[in-house]
Amino acid sequence: DIQMTQSPSTLSASVGDRVTITCRASQSISSWLAWYQQKPGKAPKLLIYKASTLESGVPSRFSGSGFGTEFTLTISSLQPDDFATYYCQQYHTYCTFGQGTKVEIK
Amino acid sequence: EVQLVESGGDLVQPGGSLRLSCAGSGFTFSSHPMNWVRQAPGKGLEWVSYISSSSTTIYYADSVRGRFTISRDNAKNSLYLQMNSLRAEDTAVYYCARDGLPRGSPVYHWGHGTLVTVSS
Image (tube, rainbow over all chains, first blue to last red; front, top):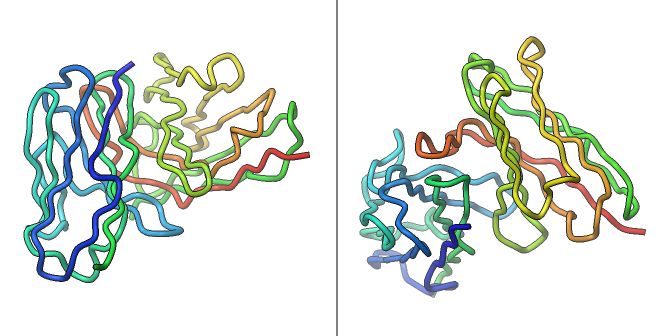
């Protein structure tokens, strides 16, 4: 099975900060990686797929990069609506999620 | 507008059974693969099962294989999850998720979830 490891688990940041979350796969997944945002009590929301393609309607301050086993999600200027938990997901072989990164207000 | 509405969640005793349903609308249900994804209280997301658009390909997570059965009825625009031999660790919100094809597409749409609690 492919394991996904996210870091950090928790991130404290302020509005306007540049934020980067890392996701590592236990084996190569090419570009078959997605990022989701989840707020408490809500379903996840797709942000990025194919490692770097922004889903329609998602603000351009979100970006993704990486290939193979190392991937990053970057928020260029953190906004109040962005405080949430973020998950990476590989969909190369079945499906596996990372353990999540909670972005908190500093 | 794409809508996925789960139902069937309940409190059930260990060893019991439950059947979850998901009604899809606002899209051509028969054209899309579907998944079940769960989230234990305060925990992360865990993929449970996948079914292709025509039911010809089915996958399960190791944690549920042999106990859970995924199925769909395209005529009724519905997805199902039959859960048997339930354990405390199956307690979670279960999400119905559209798409999520391995080496194809991520999950584009999620339902609101239905809560399954396994406890005596």
